[in-house]
Length: 142
Image (cartoon, rainbow, N blue to C red; front, side, top):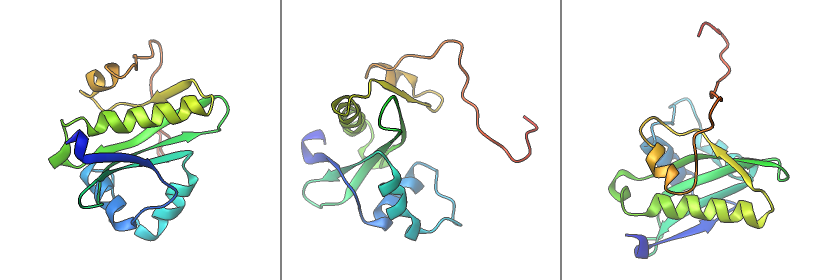
């Protein structure tokens, strides 16, 4: 599959394809609007799409949030279920790391979903001992 896919840094992409990827990742809420996706892409420091060469359709994506100087965070990495385990995710992460390094950003973090640590560790990510990811909640009863 890797030879059938190219990873591209993009400034825009078909909103419905991106929404389908978010759905595949389990991150899409039906109250979201596809009309917000262009702003999401533009607001990302980097946004990459893995494109199936023959069909031209997106089979994966990932993005970086950053101030462009000191830190970068990879998020929203998703590959369609039919393409998982084929190296597409590695291509996406490698492209995002390369873009960050080219921009002079060497501190690159992410929050991994449970059980995905080995995937990221083979790409150079290590657990951050002594750190715990937190999320803001309107009702902070953790």
